[in-house]
Image 1: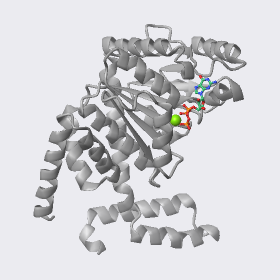
Image 2: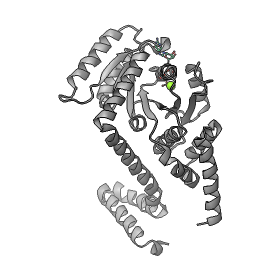
Image 3: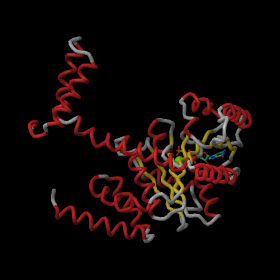
Image 4: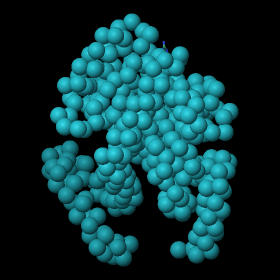
Length: 334
Ligand SMILES: Nc1nc2c(ncn2[C@@H]2O[C@H](COP(=O)(O)OP(=O)(O)OP(=O)(O)O)[C@@H](O)[C@H]2O)c(=O)[nH]1
Ligand SMILES: [Mg+2]
């Protein structure tokens, strides 16, 4: 390894980390960009800052596209700011290959908070690798946390696995539903009702809101734990008018108290960290696994699969065996 390059990298990480810890917003923006790019520079920076994380309360906001997540986040930020808390928002858009539209759109919807120095808003969009986006969002949340914000809100659109991975890494996960389109039925089917700690029925000014509220509420009551566990509730809201938002903020505070007092918080954060490391390990191993040798083995095996000479399971075993042999004797593979 090039020691001159690595000491330069450490020095640069130390300077940037120092500025970030000192409250420099430019340094925070720069650090998130560095984390998005990944690699050794990002790792060196995150390593320096890890011990400064864990103080912020992390809120994940997820739900179908257009449910009003950004509007609700904006209203929630104003509510938290009214109590003098500082808030960092990371808006993740897994579907958009561009960040610019997201930044502008979210700035408009979160208007009234974007010029406040107690608020930091950052948008992130996919860079092709799906696993990469949840890694980058997790790293960005760590950086906002280390920068001293009281709350980190991570907003992500959609109901797929990536969005869940991102939102579910929070201390409190909010699922935003809307009355129309049977979104709550979809959410139920997708099994995502269990991932959230609290539900918001946004656009409660729309027709059918009351029925939808009752339907979800009865479902949640049926799922309530018999003992003293956390009881998931649905809160009606009209984010555009900030209606119901104080109740959502109160529910978040109550969930926070529950996790802290029950000791569940440490267990939950531990589980999140373990899952994150697992994904990092998988991300590190993947390019090694699918190097030229294995890619060739796979491609040539496909012909045997097509002609019934080999089964997918046997080919998979063969590839794993070849990887293991390569790990056991790396020098002989060259
Ligand atoms: N009627 C009504 N409209 C709302 C409400 N909340 C948000 N909207 C509108 O719904 C539209 C979508 O709101 P956003 O906050 O951008 O929704 P989002 O879930 O962040 O959207 P994506 O990030 O694109 O998935 C906007 O036109 C909002 O003004 C509400 O409570 N009632
Ligand atoms: Mg949004």
